[in-house]
Amino acid sequence: MRHSSRRLLTSALLVLAAGAGLGVAPSAALATGVTATVDVNSQLKIRAKPSLASPIKGTLRDGQRITVACTVTGQNVRGKLRTTAVWARLGNGYYVSDSYLRTAKRAPSCGSAPVGDKVKAKPRETGTTPQYVAGKVRSKDGAVNVRTTPSSQGVPVRKVPNGGTLQLVCSVPGPTVRGTVRTTNQWDRLTDGRYISHAYVVSAALKVCAGAPDTAPVTPTVSQSEFISAAVPGAQLGWRQFGVPPSVTIAQAVLESGWGRSGLASVDKNYFGIKCQGGSFGTIANGCHVYPTTECDKAGKCFPTSDAFRTYATMADSFRDHGYFLKVNKRYTPAFAYTRDANNFIWQVWKAGYATDPNYYTKVTGIMAAHNLYQYDTWK
Image (cartoon, rainbow, N blue to C red; front, side, top):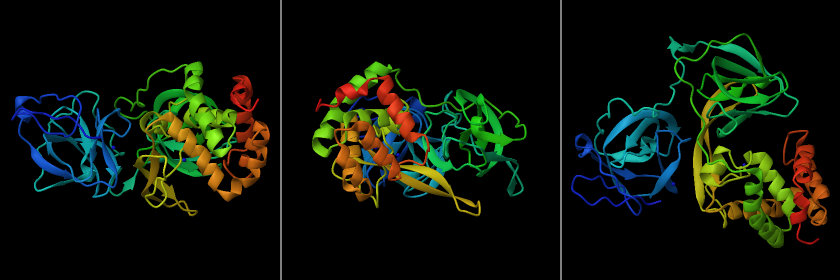
């Protein structure tokens, strides 16, 4: 329910990227650059590559002055100042989106981006009308996620309900998904550059997208038992503070974050997709991360927008905030009559409208039973 001061570089030929951490010298060709000022509501995350899916290497604060060595083309980002696919390369070889930078003059181009840095552009258009194949979502599992990359680990940017129409451009391979229509590793690229699993799509045949496919962010491999062990302390603390059974919290985190492999979980330690409201992230989260999204009205007209998701310092903080979220939202009040009855608790939460998936209750309780999560309900 969705970024720390950097490296102090000391030589005159090094580029200042602020704060603390490791310093890496740029090449001689990039030793000079353009001074920029960060303009962001919270913190600006520094990435290993010019993409929001790339690993975080540090953060910059609002008002911080940095030196941009050069610029490359990467993922299109809607930021505080502008919407742009331009990314600034710092002297240590990492990147920040130009959508949050103020400069007196334009930084020079880096030339060809390093191998693996390029992010696919939106499909080529003929005149002003993009070429696409019409598709329709068919799902018995509720609304289907549209993601930033062709993988269930990609950040979800919007949902398409059963019967919803799509504009498909081409297809790429990715992780296999078992859906309502078929089981397949095909992912369909939409006209806005996002992806949806073909397992839930009915359409004519699609051409294969030109070039190598985008890749999902690389996340450390964590076993299911390791994930559960890491989750228990925060889930139990959340129960003691707010009354949500630990087994429920852990199972929901498993389901909603894909065992911690979702973009929100791996990047922002947000395991439940909790959003910032009006720029506020409450007392437990440590900030907001704005992701560009696309929304569609009932007439099927789509438009670009953005959503801010809460970021956390630890997994435990995300779990505690999940408990607080349920506790303070009055629609979930009936569930708290069952703080020592995990199955009834999640039934009341689902019945109050927590998830649109008609099988959500069955999925959560299935995870609870399969992994004996009830053993962590500390009142027993």
